[in-house]
Image 1 (cartoon, rainbow, N blue to C red):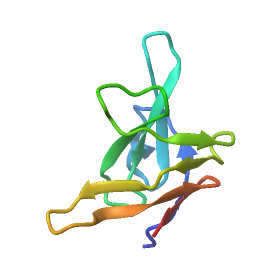
Image 2: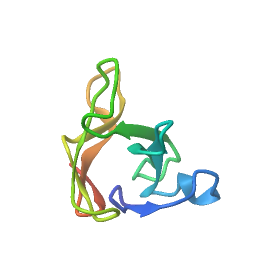
Image 3: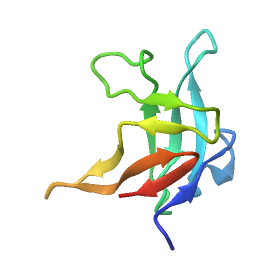
Length: 102
């Protein structure tokens, strides 16, 4: 199985939320989109969250969003599960709606 995945939106309760590329939006109390929760592109079923620039708090990392969902580009890069030996379980970018490992 490849470690790149096309992004696609799912409902948070959907069984598909663990599939590579699946994401759902995080909302604040006013219903505004503030980030996403997404499945690891490698297919391991791990999920992680990303907050959009200006929507985070307490020094959490934030990402810039360029384009329209689901074919967006996020920056900076995405690192999932930092390893004790350095590096990440998965590291890459969301570019034009595709999670691309680098």
